[in-house]
Length: 122
Image (tube, rainbow, N blue to C red; front, side):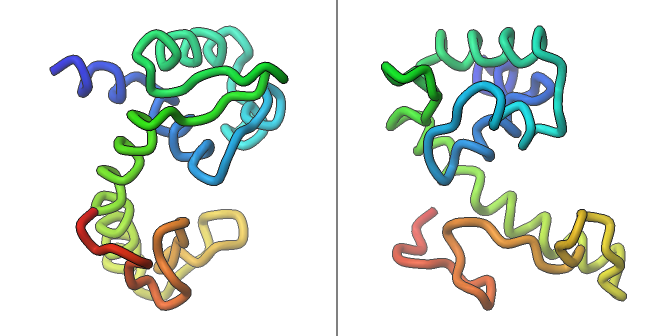
């Protein structure tokens, strides 16, 4: 229940998602999170730091910890489901995503055709 509470807070999963490709500083992470307010961003980063899902590097950037990477991998099936869901509710692929088609939202653990890259034991 604690994990659901942590990840159920607005922006928590988005922060984990945005850190999937590597470390980011406060401002770049804030930009990727649709310019969320600085106070909410600080609060979520503190919660994720306390939960050991992310950590802060000496240069002040944030990155996923091994636990955070495990959480990201656990979310991959949900990301794949979201792609199918988007295609089902908008079979025309209308662009509501700022340049990505609704039916294909790529994520780092898939190749261009949407199949899992590497191990499939997500």
